[in-house]
Image 1 (cartoon, one colour):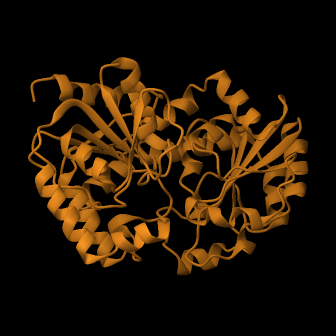
Image 2 (cartoon, one colour; image 1 turned 180 degrees about the vertical axis):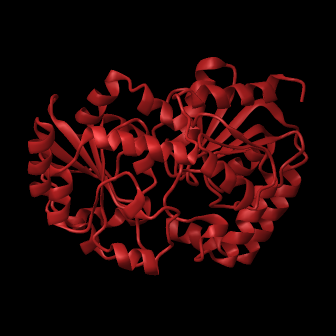
Length: 390
């Protein structure tokens, strides 16, 4: 059934009918208390839209909050109403919501009215890989979609000057860009104790165990060998350096999550498949150590002072053949390894004091400033748009 639906959605007739529906629904009045939020075109309840939604819900229970999902039945907090992506209901709520909130430009949106307000949160605090106009691998279709999205956008924000400049010059966007805390950083700066318990219970990990989180990014060519390394040996090194008993949570990029079962045998005791976990920010908040290669999440983790180790077994090939990076991995304030031996050496030689100093220099160089109050800051703007004189 799902395949038939996808086939129909790819036809010219469907696109024509969708365009006609847009035109009809555009004439419906805007409901000023309605907000529609999307995370990666319905992928799950997470990222900045999640933390903005929870803050709005806490501040004003009268708001009608609609969350975009890929299919009915996706678990959501009580009070959030699911809307299936690309459905007639989705078109209706997009046409009548006062506020749109999204973190990607992954799909075309209906025409926006002057009275509607669209916050494009994007989906990384800083980001290592080049993106938007800096990326050389974008398709013409994506560029058109991104340009259309930018023309509809009313606000972008960041907690660092480097990304602010990118939003202003490299995102096809000419609207307001403000500096404020990023909503999803709040859980890292102010981690509720129940998050530690919740994450461990999800994976059946006993209390007291330390968590090493491995989050590699995707490559254009799917080669699972670049994600395999000596997990057991790494755990021994982490225990020798930091004390306690560690377990691994391994979370693949959404583009390659389907490969998770064949990547390695998750034993359910020391190696856990964390790819299905709904919100990576909760994993980052609960973890003690992060190992990554080029994933933007490493900055979120580091910005609260936690230790990050880089492992890029295909470093030279990635830098020459893939998307390219804004910062040289060799110049970042994180120990860099390209194999098991150099990773073991990075962990063994890790100095918390030197790491903190290097990290501070880097954060100053990008103009980073965040205190974990982003959800409140963005909610203030949205509520002013809803109830203020605009």
